[in-house]
Length: 122
Image 1 (cartoon, rainbow, N blue to C red):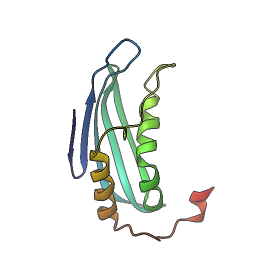
Image 2: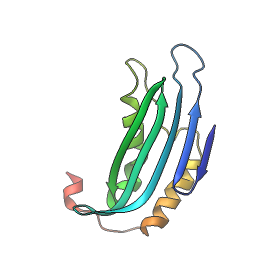
Image 3: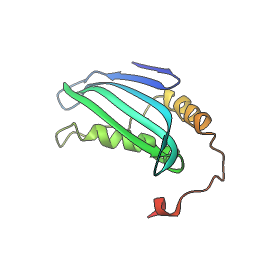
């Protein structure tokens, strides 16, 4: 199950077998201005993965958010799974992330060719 509304995504998955995993995650996001990094998106992922509570908050600056927000969410989710289980990319089959991408783009007024801070390339 996956639901989307601007600023909020809820995705739930039930394990299909013992080598699979379950999760119920809500991701809230909003435009935010960080004193050091400037404009960007503040994310808050909460819920559960394999029954373990999840509560992760993080900020991505404008020039980093669109190329990496799904990777960051997936990496943080992976930390809640014991090896050898692998958390699939949250983007997998969900069109809602296309909508999320467009919503973030609109919230930050991102345009092709916007500059990237050189320190973010290191």
